[in-house]
Image 1: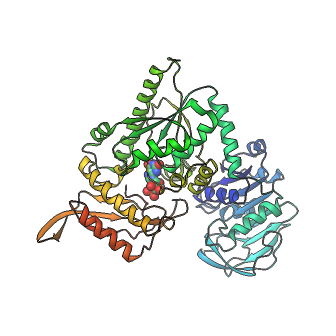
Image 2 (image 1 turned 180 degrees about the vertical axis):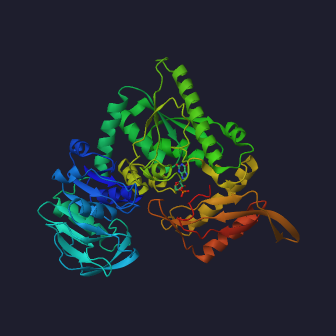
Image 3 (image 1 turned 60 degrees about the vertical axis):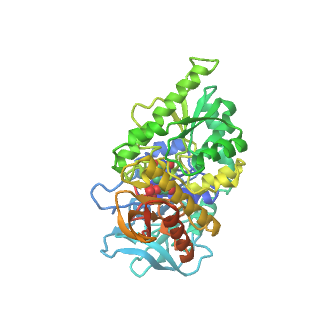
Length: 516
Ligand code: XMP
């Protein structure tokens, strides 16, 4: 693999993903990895990621510098560029001049890394310190107004680095830098595809579970649908899918899973009706984290019960089902504080919300992947477009889209509003433009309105259309006014107790996509 060394920024997985887009397999490792551990992984390349710190700061993430003696081609990015410069005898200075955001770079010597790129280009910067002198044996490739060494290269040792962030889309030739490093500097062929992921995961799952039986938490969403199809390919009927109707589902969702998904995959499906159980557990609860934890916990309890029932009814009674498949994606892992040095933003119910006494061992074949990669794998597995193309829907469902206590009446109301919004967005052909559009009920807020000839005192519905590549960051989607008008008219006319529709115009950050 190519190892992406994580210095604690959320950029590391983005880099890993760009490397995979260049058709090279990559893995993220923490910066605490030792040279011996690196050698054991036998990488064909290393990328040192950006990080939040200055190399001079107390407690700044360090790297075992013996890694530079292993003879592995290395690309340093931002903080990783400075770590590389400092370790190899260059100078990193606190210039006091921060560069942040779009910055003009002047390419002097193209070297191999910047071959074919324009001399003047715009890149994305985010740094305080600068490399003021390149290490011996390195050629300076680029400069900016404030940075004398913005990129360097040592062709002999296959060491290169850039001060900017080539992994973000704001760097015009960013992907080109990454591909030049991989293919031309390090000489790595572009031969890794989503087909490889499937083969690899299938082999791994087979080895992991042997002849054991596997349970899958099917939610109807893209992630669990693809995870289950992948596991089904690996172990066939050793897999049983359990679909929990927790009452927090969207309109028509249960039927789609019970009919469409089963028809397209042939998996064995058991539906558990747990609507009352979830509503009871959520009664009186308004705190978002508490809701998430309760939903996560009840989920697991329901699966444990399903397991017990399946064991009891099977011929080989007494042979417990040990494995549980979950469609956890990488962004879920990072945001629940699973990445090294990243903050806990929310407990995603697949990860942070799990109780400690869980009795299953988890199979999470999509844990290192992003949504669009998962969709691609789903297509490769032959799942229909209606399933792989669906809007992401969170595990805790409508439970975290009712701001306030979750009750059945409120769920019914929100289901109607959500169905209207989705139908109108689809009818307007906007499904590919938006990433998802949560519809949120502000159950504890009321406002005065007028309808027919009377005063109303109802609740607002929030529309939260967002555009995103991977849900790590997002922007609010500029929906056409006439589409917004239609959604607003229909919701206020057709949904009782709603007399106002508002639009959320916040990007992520600072807002998250879901309101809770
Ligand atoms: P946020 O709200 O954190 O959401 O910006 C990022 C993406 O994740 C989805 N989401 C979840 N998915 N379990 C999931 O499987 C969860 O607990 C969960 N919470 C949020 C959200 O819909 C968005 O796509």
